[in-house]
Length: 149
Length: 162
Image: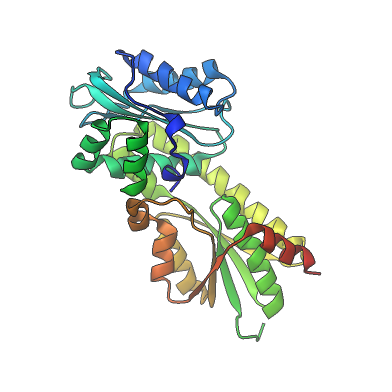
């Protein structure tokens, strides 16, 4: 619930332009900044990079879930991106990542942060659904899939 | 405490909807002369799922567990404050585990007559409906469940309580 109720077209980017891990993170943080959901873009980016430095958030099946805690957001903020070419995100299966969920939460909102991540973990279990998201033609289609699933 | 409802339980998760539920539960408890208990749960089940899915590192699980414990403490203090403002002492229950299982256990253990929960989000996917822990609690508790809706109206009702 924490995730789906926050999904709207302005926080979804299809396709992503970046071809590197850092570039994708920067691009998705930029999506949140453009949507007015973060107050300090550099601090938000640094929080995600700091977490990524401890271990990749690239999962199997082409999904990556970069996330971080930062006071640069006032509430749980989510951005979604789809890469057509795939990006080396250091995923556990060694395959390029194509579907990205950037999750940022303020330090005092651990509950919604965990709820959103848990929703993605459940979603990631369905390979067919993830394939449908990766194959989405535009942001609207991603939103419809997520709300309808 | 010999009215038709003697023991009420309200679930608090930090959302404004859950605090609307606390306000309404305070009104109900005062009206029926019932006791009110508030429960908040550190969702260690979700933390475990995230480690299993490799979204969380083991160290992150511990860090977020501490964060959640802090959150739960704040939520319960706020629930107590909402009660005190209307002269009602709200007992609190901190739990950890699966949200629905802990709510159900508290209902059974304390002999709760009525569970009060906040309004569910309007935008929900089918997956949410399958996995929502409050939904599951509502389906599995052996007592009646009251869903608090319309926060503005609840605030008016709460404000009018002497």
